[in-house]
Length: 177
Image (cartoon, rainbow, N blue to C red; front, side):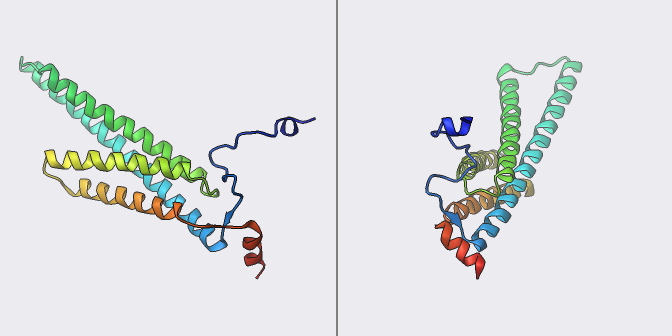
């Protein structure tokens, strides 16, 4: 007896469709594949930009520390801890964006909702962080474009999750016509 036959209660991986067994209509399946690819690429792009922003903050912090040390000054500990925390948040955000984006690209042929839910949670958190950041300093084009791209990701994930599944035999009949 093979392993698959022995254990009939196997747990599906998160990218497999749920137990309802329905599939998307051919038109919705094509839209789903395309939008999951767009969502994944947008998330990876935001991850790369967030990583770049973390890098620029690290290099700016090093330059400031070097300048202050040469002039004999002192940087207060709370200011340094806030700067390190901000850099840490951007690094974690960058890794999370790349991970969720890659997950959406890999699962573009499935109807799994877990990658979409992860994308919504991540972009909602980033959206809030960007709004808080924009209230503390004068916003520029980068902040507005990141806000817009996060809003686009959230709206596309919601649209993707609302796509209706049809019975498998109905989808096969539509393809035959």
